[in-house]
Length: 129
Image (spheres, one colour):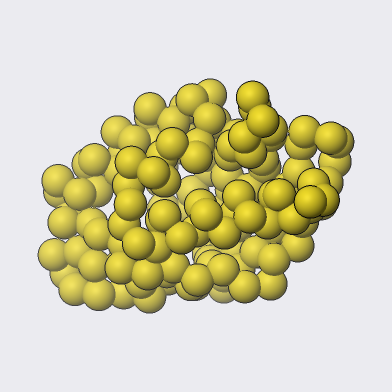
């Protein structure tokens, strides 16, 4: 299997876990030292733990729940044997106390192969305009 296909498979699993609300599995796909830049967050998140804490606040305060997620327009750039970038468009349906909402966003995800497993080491999420 090619490196590009391995990254595509890792990305598909990440999106699948996120979209199905498999929170533990989703966070297990993120490296502990991963960083996150989300247009919905007030500042850069410097670790998986910081993101997990923010997620917990979303759930506790807003009733946040991911109902579905779809990735389209995937482009994978293999930068080295163990580093690759995925860019894609994301359509996510979420539910909160306020009701359901469909988000349209663009995302760049940096993957690194760690111990033979492709993990997210950085995500940058932007509104799709």
